Amino acid sequence: MKVILLSGGSGKRLWPLSNDQRSKQFIKILRNPEGDRMESMVQRVWRQLSMVGLTKDAFIATGEVQRSILKAQLEIDDLKIITEPSRRDTFPAIALASAYLYSEMDVGEDETIIVLPVDPYVDTEFFRRVKDLEELLENQDTTL
Image 1 (tube, rainbow, N blue to C red):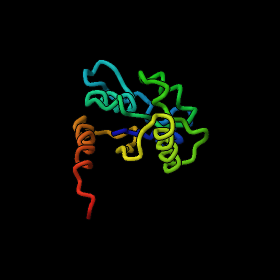
Image 2: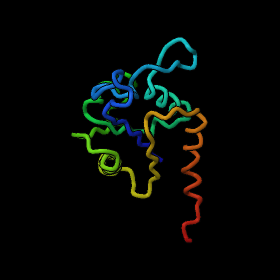
Image 3: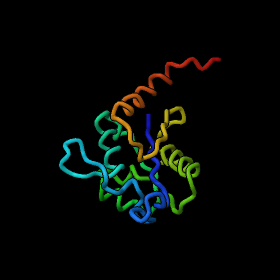
Image 4: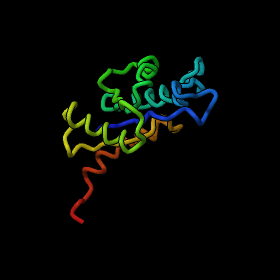
């Protein structure tokens, strides 16, 4: 199973805190679990994915202008950041990320791919349940 996190946006929802260069998912407004520092939504989600063992199979689809801030906030391999040359909205981002996984990362056509926003405010248990989806889908009777 692969996870594609969508990290786009024009930065209009939390303006003036967010803008084209720094969308809401990068603003450090959340306390980490220890309560000793602030973290962004993208840092929180990446930490939660790490806790359940999903970062090894997670990729982030984003615009080129957000690549550097992702690298600054996360310990993430360049190959896990899929950048659009220009903003084209949700479906083209998913299509590009899927094509990248297939052509560049040798992900098979039968691989389960989960697409999620990069900024949900959910408990870590949510990502444990996401991890369970692969087994559930593989055991599904598709002969209906």
